[in-house]
Every structure is written in C-alpha cells, then in structure tokens.
Length: 247
Image 1: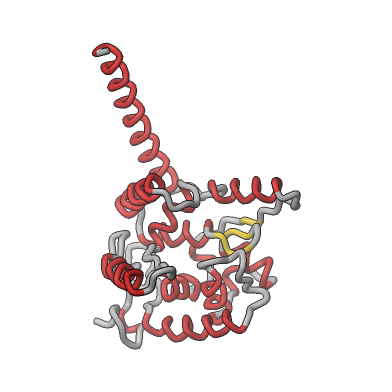
Image 2 (image 1 turned 60 degrees about the vertical axis):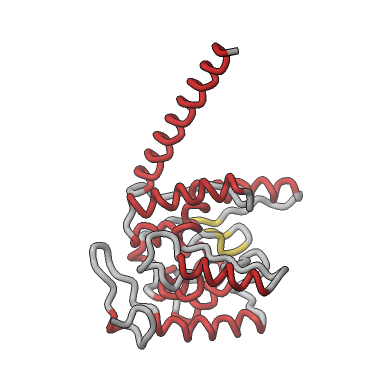
C-alpha cells in the first residue's frame, strides 16, 4: 500500500509539473504567435455537425492596429470598464455582482473581465464548473503576468465569438457589415459589443429594438472610456469626459 501511494504521489507530481510547464509555454508562445484556432471554435463545429448543420467557421486574424480604434473602447464600455486599471480581476465588479445576486435570485450577474474571457476563449471550454473556473483564474493570472494589455485586447478581439460561426473583429466586419475591421464605425462597434453576452441569439446584422437600445447605452458609456493606448503607452485621461479614467 505504501509503495502504491508513493507511485501515485510521483505520478501526480509529474502530471502537475507537465501541466504547469506546458501551460506557461503556451501562454509564452501566444504572446507572439496569432491564435488561429480555439477550443470553442472546435466545440461549435462539432455541435454544428451533431445538429446536421453545415460546419461554418469564419475567422481571420488581424493585428490590433488593423481593427477600428472604436472597438476596444466599445467592448470595454460594455464588458469591462476598468480593464486598463485592474490586474485581471475587477474586485469592485465582483462585489457588486455578489450584492446584486443576493437580492435578485434567478437573475445572476457576472463580473468576468476581458482578461478572464480571453483566458477562457483561448485555453479552455465553456462551462460553470469549479474546475474550469479555477483554471480560468490560473490562465488569467498568467496572461496578465506575461502579456501586455494591448496583447490581451488583440487576442480577445480576434478570438471572441461574435455570431454563429463568426469569431473575431475581421470576421464579423466582413460577414455582417461587408467591410474590413479597420473601417467599422463607432456605432457599429457599439452594436457588435451589445451582442457579446449572447452572440448566438443577438445578431448585429439584424438588430432588435433591445439591441439598438443597448447600443445607445454603450455609446454613452464610451464617453468615459479613454482611447485605447498603443503598446508601451499609458491611457490619455484627456480623451474621456469623466469617470474613473479622468485624472
């Protein structure tokens, strides 16, 4: 029995070493290499096949510099307003979500940051298990440690699901607006951001009254989000009209 436990202990030890080594290596590689495929893309293709639907995957990687300057601002306004201020986890948003969920049973509010969503999209799968959440926390810590905010945003905007079989800014710009990602207007970026909580049910090409209302809310919030800074630069507080970024 003691010998068996010793073998199990050694096995677990080497599995953990292999996991930590490979995960750090993956994050390091993706610091420089474009992310052409994610677990979610593969899962969605399998789901389409199982439902006897045509497998579609629209995805084209483009550098952050070739994406409309309005899109980072729009997704921050919609998904993570303190993205440039936190280190991967917005503690204030987490507390606000916890307080809301206590008083609104059945209407769960999340507090997932852009960093967390990027970690989940690139390295993990969908789901609500504690195991996946723990891994999401781990990978969020790694990318915040090893990537810049610009790289996190670049990967996020290129990998996030933005429609049925549509992933990333270039794909949604082409499929829904018939233009390149660099040509997206402020209004179009706000509309795309309005779909992100559920892009399979919310279509930026065919906006409902709710989506148009949400678009207006995001356009208003964008006034308080600074122009997204270039690599190595800090945000310019003069580009906002108030809020947490106004120094």
